[in-house]
Amino acid sequence: MTQYLLAIDQGTTSSRAILYTLDMTVVSTAQEEFRQHFPRNGWVEHDPEDIWDTVLRSCRTVLSKNNVDADQVSTIGITNQRETTLVWDRHTGQPVYNAIVWQDRRTADICRQLHNDGLEDTCQQKTGLLLDPYFSGTKVKWILDNVAGARQKAEQGDLLFGTVDTFLLWRMTKGEVHATDATNASRTLLFDIHNQRWSTTMMRELGVPASMLPEVKDSAADFGICAAEWLGADIPVCSMIGDQQAALVGQACFEPGMLKSTYGTGCFAVVNTGTEAITSQHRLLTTVGYRLKGETTYALEGSIFMAGAIIQWLRDGLGIIDKADDTEELAQSIRHDQSEIMVPAFTGLGAPYWDPDARAAIFGMTRDTGVAQMVAAAIRSVAFQTEDLLQAMVQDGIEVKSLRVDGGMVRNRWFLQTLADLTGVSTVTSNTAETTAQGAALLAALHQGHFDSIQDLNKVWRVEEKYSPSIRQADRERLYQRWQSAVAKVQSS
Ligand SMILES: Nc1ncnc2c1ncn2[C@@H]1O[C@H](COP(=O)(O)OP(=O)(O)O)[C@@H](O)[C@H]1O
Ligand SMILES: O=P(O)(O)OC[C@H](O)CO
Image (cartoon, rainbow, N blue to C red; front, side):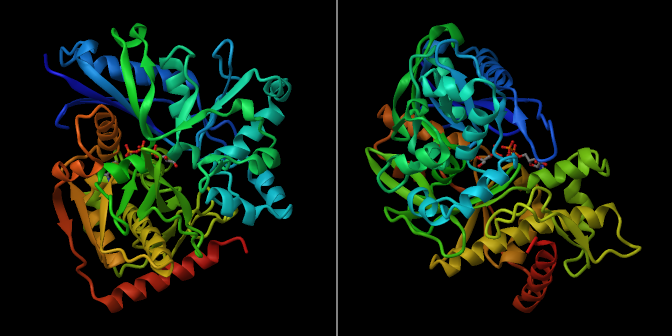
């Protein structure tokens, strides 16, 4: 009987299920978008039931459209949007509030207060992170402080916290298992990445009771059984890993210095630093790349909040394009030395600036500025932000030789060439569009012994396309200077 692997990729804007054969050939994909809730300026929420329903439906669809029975599925791997925070009742399984999404900025004041209390250094030393609303810890605190009765219930041990992986696992196992993996834990602001334990200091500072926190496992492990009620047969869940770390695995970045950059809603550049947790001097995040058999591989990460989301804004906010795919042709007519520079600080600036109060701007417009110029400026801004991250990495002592890229934006070849031009580094796409899901599937397969080692993925990873820098160094430097002076103008201090 043919056997399959099922990967679940629960992302910010959609849930996907990808079916693989045991040798990692993609059989088929099912995907469903779901609603984003913006209840106030800077707030972003998901309905937890939408997350669950779209995951379940995607899994059922990918099996049924290929006539695959659940008992032919050897294992499930889960990868997920990280930091997004859920709190639910241990007894009823009901969330006490919507999922607060990683993009949500409502806890900026809590972060400022913790900063004023002098917690910044402790936070960076223990968790590898910075005091920014991006991470889960202040979101949990907000829920406990603002949802009626939540704090009391949490202190009585009645509430559970989880990122999306943990919530899905809890539902799949029908409340049997409350667990996460080290990569997801490393994004919560509550996890000591050096000792690989929940940090009592951070729990105390954020007022989060230990009883709410999930068990932290390796990224490939026995996580529990997805009950037959959901897909038709009991299926073991053998991997859970945050989506950016899954892409690191899916892009076969197993050696120190290897970097992948994913361009979905946001952009996340992650570089493998081996068994050493490097503390950035340039406000990059130290994070867990993956943890296997108790051994932690660390990574440095630069996170940018707006990448493909800028294209969504052009489409849905301004209504000046019909679909994201139109942007490639529009931008092609624009030369690099044209004047518009967009700084997409719609929700502040992420790495390496971490300025939640910065706001977006477009500089250098003329009477010729039209839709094509706006589109080109939007796409270029993603490349400039990547260059910011690469420069920070170089200053932290990391040499980046090539960019392995993935995510929705890499369908745009003008973007890929612009990225190579503005960073001066070759841009490489791989033979699979779904590197994130591939990482989760590989880890689940590895755990079940279908692969001997993580290095086996090198057998399936191949270069698809390569874009080399095509502009002169002097032109690159001149353009980057214009970007930097534009950024300086939008910063809050
Ligand atoms: N041809 C394109 N050119 C530029 N951006 C694109 C293109 N196609 C999709 N995108 C952008 O890619 C993003 C979706 O990528 P995806 O990896 O699915 O995101 P996520 O995992 O964050 O939900 C959207 O923000 C969309 O605007
Ligand atoms: O869902 P994505 O692909 O936008 O990824 C979200 C990140 O994990 C947030 O840190």
